[in-house]
Length: 68
Image (tube, rainbow, N blue to C red; front, top):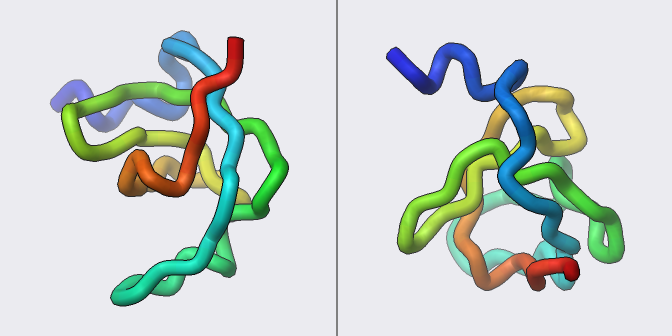
């Protein structure tokens, strides 16, 4: 049940959204290009971030660039 505590867990790293043009999914309502987001968890394919709605969401990594 680790996913229940992601909103309050420490940030793993920061990423920047580079686009919100999705083919299948509606992400333009919850991602803003150019905005930095805190990564709370990561898998091979997804970042789990606190999106613009204030909730945890899982998004494909191709929407983001890692920040240094």
